[in-house]
Length: 126
Ligand code: HEC
Ligand code: HEC
Image (cartoon, rainbow, N blue to C red; front, top):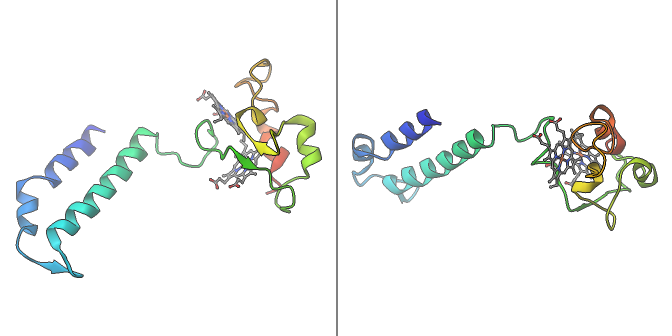
């Protein structure tokens, strides 16, 4: 995090910016603007990766499994909806937080409705 801030500080200061401040044009855009814009976008991406722990997909789905999506029961990659609703819950046919979680039962840890080893396969067939 500190290292990243240092990089940000250096990249947006005099020696580097001076390289681009000549009126060079790349792809019809002045190089200085292009550099600033691209660097800024990359920097935001990196900051996000660092502060979010870097994991966009993984076992810890506390913040990134899709919710509010309709359960695609016709999709062959997913189990039949009736089977899903034996152990989990859908709300208006949608996956919400409480599809996987039950706030009143922490027997299996993380307030999950199904033990985490089996949870994914309750819906996913892949
Ligand atoms: C597809 C199933 C699923 C959905 C939907 C889901 N979770 Fe989870 N959640 C899990 C699993 C699995 C874990 C345990 C992750 C682990 O073991 O690291 C978990 C863990 C958590 C934790 C504990 C996190 C931790 O780091 O200790 C919280 C809090 C949580 N979920 C909240 C939510 C909220 C709020 C929502 C809705 C936005 C949600 N979950 C939707 C499966 C789900
Ligand atoms: C309640 C049913 C259900 C459970 C349980 C479930 N999933 Fe999913 N998952 C889905 C559905 C439906 C989608 C497709 C959502 C969409 O994009 O429309 C999906 C999408 C995904 C994706 C793609 C994510 C994305 O952003 O496109 C991943 C990765 C994934 N699931 C992993 C898991 C893992 C790992 C577990 C177990 C911890 C799990 N799922 C448990 C129903 C479920």
